[in-house]
Amino acid sequence: MEASYALLLVKELVKEGKYLVTFSALQSAALMGFLDEDITDCIVNFLEPTHFYKTMAAEQKPGMMQDVYKITFEGKRVYLKLQINQSGLAVIVSFKIGIAALLWRRR
Image 1: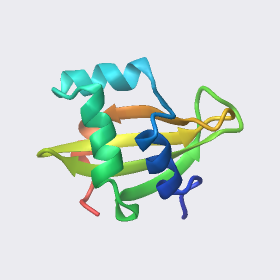
Image 2: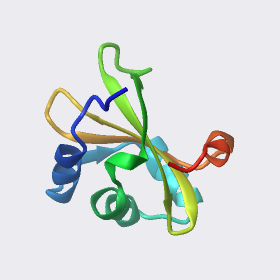
Image 3: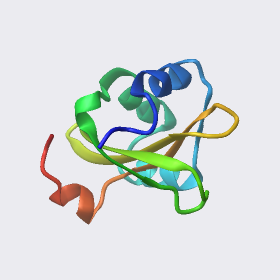
Image 4: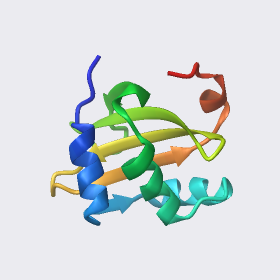
């Protein structure tokens, strides 16, 4: 299975400030001790294609896809959902840790 969006494009959009972070992603990141800058640092500087897990249909946006990545960042296992919206902005849908994130095998 391949990602729906080129990771290099997502990273470039985030680096250029052309991105949105959902409230849910900000909230769950904050609970893990991360700020918005940490989210962007993780994506731009550490996320690699080898962290790709799966692509899935977006629950809230019919017809849109989301790419799921799993990465260990600053000692914490993070589950990320990323997409590019119809306006061409990168969207950080999820940035969280949870039971599912703890059970995945490291890629």
